[in-house]
Length: 433
Ligand code: DLL
Image (cartoon, rainbow, N blue to C red):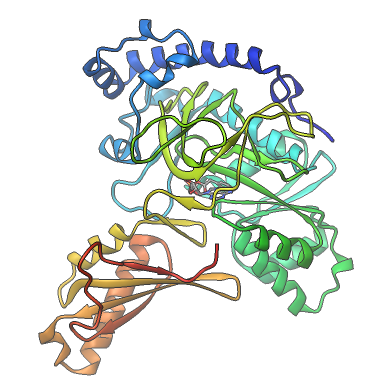
C-alpha cells in the first residue's frame, strides 16, 4: 500500500509531538503579533507567546468559533498582508457574513500535500484518471481535490458538479478510475448509471473519495455494491483548509488526521473540558503550519472520537471515527451548509408571512430535498389565490438566492404550524444517518 509522505505519516509519535510543539509555538507567535483579535483575547487571559512551550500548553489557549470569523468578516483574522494571499474561498450556503478563508502560496502547497496524501491513501497514483464532481468555486471541494490530483500526477478531469448524463458519458469515454463527489451524489450517479443501460464493464472506476457531508456505513455498502468500487471517506472544513484534514486508508477503519498540520482535540461541548482518547465529543483543531488564516482551538461542532493506535497500513497518524453528528443545528443539504437561522432572517424581512416555520429535509432518489412550510399573515390569507402564488414565488426566489439551494415553499394558514412550549422544533430531518 502506497504512502505519500512516509516521513510524516508514519512518524514515531514522540517525534511527532516534538514537531507539533515547535509548530504550535510558531503559530501562537504568528497570531499574537499579526492578528489583533488573538492578541487581545490572549492578553485578556494574561497569556503571551512566552507561556506556550509545547503542545501540553495548548489547553491554556482560548477557543475560536465560527462567529469569530463572521465578526471579523471578511479578512480580519488573516495573519498576513493581503499581498501574500493568493486564494480566497468562502463557506457555502451562508449569505452576508459568510466564513471567508485565505491562503498564501505556502498554504496552497500544504493543501496540495495533504490532498496528495488523501488520494494516495485511497489507492490513487499517476496512472489514475480522477473525475472531480465536487463543485468548483468558492466551495473548497473542487479545487482542493484538483491540486492534490495534479500533485500525484494523475490525470485530473475537472468536470465539477451536476449534469449527470455528461458525468456518465465522460466517465466511460475517458476511463475515469477515481470519482470525487459527495456520497449522496455518488449514489445518485450509481442509480443513473444503472438506468442508462450502459454496462458496468464499460467503466474503469475503482475507487471514490467521498465527503463534505455525513454518510453511514450502510450508504457506503450501497455505493460500493452499486458502483463496484472502494468508497473512501474524506473529511475537512474550509476554516481549517478544506478537504485534506483527514481521510481513510484502504482499511477503512477511521480517518487519519494530518496532525502534523492540524492538531486535534476532543472536548465536551457543554463544559469545554478536553476529553481523553476514545471519548465521543466535539472535534477542535489548531492549525500548525497555516500562514493566511491560522486558527487556534477552532471548534468544528463535529462529533467524533480519536484513536491513537497505529493502523494496519503503517500510518501512525491519529484516527477519528466517521463524523455522523454535530453539536449545533447546522444541516448539510446536497453538500451545502445551512443554518435554520439563515431561513429565519429571510422570513423576518418579508412582509405577508409570519416567522412560524418548519423545514423538512428528506432524501428522494438519493438526492436531498428541502421544503419550507411557513404561515401566511391573516390578512394575506383572505386574499386571492394569485396573490398567494406570487408571494410563494417571491419567497422561494429570495430563499434560493440567499441559501444557494433549491427549496419548495408551502404556504399554510395562520396557526397551522405546531407551537411548542419549550425549544421550538424548526427542522424535521427524515434522512437516515
Ligand atoms: O465540506 C470540505 C470538504 C470538501 C470535505 C470535499 C470533504 C470533501 P465546508 O463546506 O466548510 O467544507 O463544510 C465542513 O462539512 O464541519 C462537517 O460538518 C461536514 N463534513 C465534511 N466532510 C465530512 C465527512 C467541506 N467526511 C463541514 N463526514 C464539516 C461528515 C463531513 N461530515
